Length: 68
Image (cartoon, rainbow, N blue to C red; front, side, top):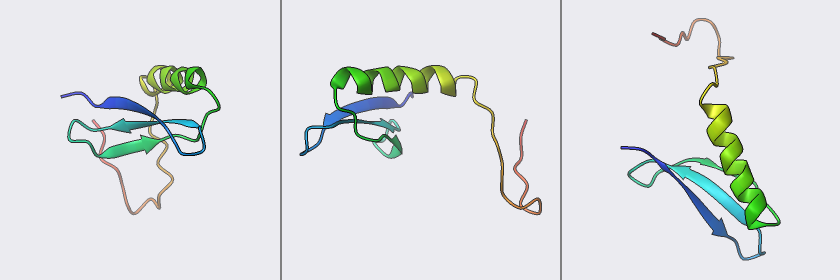
């Protein structure tokens, strides 16, 4: 099941988004944006960037990450 982006407006009037799992756990949360349109543009940016993102593992080499 896919996660979803949730857009909210905080008490100071800024718009924020969070990427959540199907169970509602927050995976990513954004900074505040002045307009809803800016927040939605950022969501689109995350969608397009994450599709091709690579893992940059900066942990010590004795802690390997298994990849397939």
